[in-house]
Structures are given as C-alpha cells and as structure tokens.
Length: 435
Ligand code: URA
Image (cartoon, rainbow, N blue to C red; front, side, top):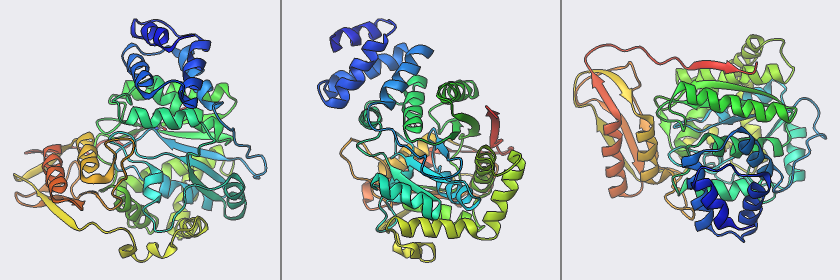
C-alpha cells in the first residue's frame, strides 16, 4: 500500500477502505509517513469529507493506536465529559469537581488548545506545580482516593490522535465533522469511562458554526459511543460569543474558581450546573437530569465543589493556595484596554475573533513547538445584550509583548458590534441528544 495513492484517492473524492485508514493511522503514528503527506491527506479529507463508515473506522484505528485504559478497579459508573472546543470554555474546571462532589468518579483525559480554542490541559498547567502527566497507577489511585483526576493525553493513549491533533492545529484542518468526531471519540473510548457527556459547541466560536452542523456532529459522536456500548449524550450549547468573561489560560482558571465560589458569570454557572446534572444522572446518582442539576447546584452553593477542586489541585502537585491568592498565577506585564466607539447595546461579539486575538497575544500556539504564555488572554467585560457608553472599557487584553498585545486589542475591538437597539441574550442550551 502507498500513502500517495491514498492521498490521491481521497483528493479525487474516493472512499477509503479499512486497510487504507489503518495504514495511514499506523504509518503516521510510527513516523513512517511524514508530516507533509499526513497534512496533504488531512486536507483532502477536509475538502472531500468522509462518510459515516470511514469516520467510524478512523475513530477505531485511532482508539487502538495505543493503550486502552481499564477503569474497572474504580467503583461506580465513570462518566467522562468532553467539549468540542470553544472560546472561554472553562466548564470542565467547574463541572468535574461538581460531579465528583456528587459521587461521580471522574477519570478524565483532556487536550491542549486547538486552533482558536483553548484546552483544559494548558489551563491546568497555569496552576504552579500542577502535573498533567501522571502514570496510570497514580491516575487510578487518585480517582479512588479523592474521586477526580484529569490528565493530558499520554504518549501511550491514542498516540495517533495526539500527533494528528497537533498537526491539524497548525495546518488549517480542524473544522471537519469526521476529523473532530474521530479525534474526540477515539480518546473517550480509549479512556475507559462507562458513559460520556459531550458539550457540542455551536456558533461563531465553535468549529461547528450552525445548529445543523453541531447536531450532525453530536449525532455522529453519540452513534460512535453507543456502538461501543457506552451511554453517550450530546448537549448542543451556544458558542456565538465567548463563554463567561475570561479567555486565556490563567484568566480562565481564576474565573472557574470564582464560579465555584458562587461569583461566576451567569452563562458559565448555568452551563456547568446543567452539564454536571446530566453527568450525575447518567452516572446513576440521580433519577433525572433535573435532580442531578439540583445536586450540582447544592454542591456549588455549599462549597463542596470548591473543596473538591482544591483537593484535586493538591493531589496533582499544584499549589491549592491559588484558590485564595490569584497573584500566585503567572502574571501578565502588559494590559491594554479596548473601549466602545459608540453608545448602544452589544449586538455581537465574534467569538472566533476573540479566540484568535487571544491566541495572537500568546495564549495559543502558532506552530506545534510553541510554548503558550499562560498569563496572556482577553477579559471580555461586556456581553451580548449589555448596554455600553462611548469610551467605556469593553475588554482588556493581557500579555507580555507590547506589539502582540496591541494587535490583540485591535482584533478584539473588531469582534464587537454595537448597535442602537436592545438585543436578546442567546439561548445557552439548544438541544440535548441521546438522553
Ligand atoms: N477536541 C478534540 O479532542 N478534537 C478535535 O478535533 C476537536 C476538539
């Protein structure tokens, strides 16, 4: 078999066979297929798409490219949660401790930033000392003792996705239903949980811009999950504007902590409680998602969620004092204010543009080898529907490079559209599939 033939076949709209998909996944993982040929094939898939059968085969080939975790030593129904990626999406940092505080064992593998979206692993690494690489015994032991552990993708689990994900991040091949669903589901199935709750983002700051595309992605992932015998639920949620106010790694961790203290933005708080409610229900600790929601809300209000976050940070080598002292996070040396050009109402905040602006200030990667600036990012002070006055600060850009921060501020300003009439806030939870 020859990779050039496979590239040409897909380029010309052909359907790849199981053998061809396995040949590509194995060859790229082992290094016999170089980046440039893998990039060409990914771009061909991006334009020509894959059908359902090819997508399932790709997910399976990536799932078995490395170890598959056995969580059977952990008691209870293990529930995983995954977001398809958004701007300002720090929900895992809130949802995981809330669900864990309600008795759901959380053994989670998370990703790094991808394209204009952030990743939980980069965010967690902004906590001084926090380790996202744990050996399997430590990972499982921690879930058994404190009920929660979140690790980065190791070299042993879905190494194919690890390499393909990093390549897609820098080759403009992220926004494709088959590539996203196989990437997410290969990891989720290899990570060994019994049930999976997917937060499928929809709108300008998501990879799926329309409701129809987000539903199609959610449906495909539910089918992949169910075919592997895992209860899989997809919650389609709004990403037309950044989620919460903070975008960027340490800024988002601080916002997640504030949310667990009960002071979080409305949208993050509502979404976290809804997602945790679904997890608590599918994990068998509540008789309905509504009851699960009430349990998650109680854990937020009485501080059990925050306590769980502190225990989780400590167990993974992080300094739990960050919860009370935000100066322990990496600090940006530069902050640049973005002001409104007119009186009126915020009609739109283009989330992708904010995500890109944040990435350009240093919060994301431009090439595979880039380190991220954990203190960089954007604090969005006004959200859709808010009234603003001319000259009022609508966002603050943080970074450590004058030029990058200035460009970030210009970009951030372009993301805002201010109009004369009041506008409705977008509906946060649009649909739930698979419940
Ligand atoms: N999250 C993933 O893990 N993979 C994707 O392709 C997109 C979001």
